[in-house]
Amino acid sequence: MTEWLPALNACLNLTSAVLLLKGRSRIRAGDRTGHRKFMLAAVWVSVGFLTSYLVYHYLHGSTKFPGEGIIRPLYFAMLTSHTILAAANVPLVAIALYHALGERFPTHKRIARWAYPVWVYVSVTGVLIYLLLYQVYRP
Image 1 (cartoon, rainbow, N blue to C red):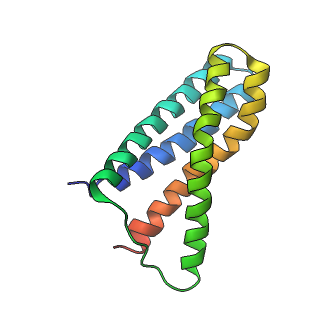
Image 2 (spheres, one colour; image 1 turned 180 degrees about the horizontal axis):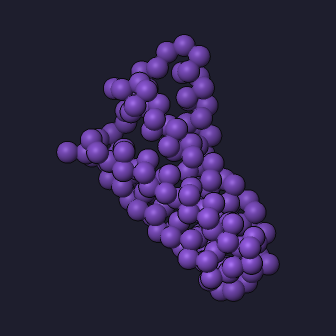
């Protein structure tokens, strides 16, 4: 019943990463409207991811990583950094979004300088974790 959710989660993470990159390119080009649209889309895609992720783990539980050798500590190092940064980034993104929507752009920019690279890292490593856990080393 839930076997398709990890693939959906990876697609949502990948979509989030692409939207983030597009959003940053728009603000660098001076296009605040385009930036806002891409970043709000990234927020909504990430909310969808978090919802799907929580549903999957509530219904399915954990999946053990079967890889052995050097890939095992590398996988767990990536998973650990991904998990810690994902948890830390939720309030960072929320605060950055709050300031952006309130048009307090200097504060938004200061927070976004931290939140943006962490968010991209979390999105990309989410896809890599999926690939390792469900494609390369199938349970």
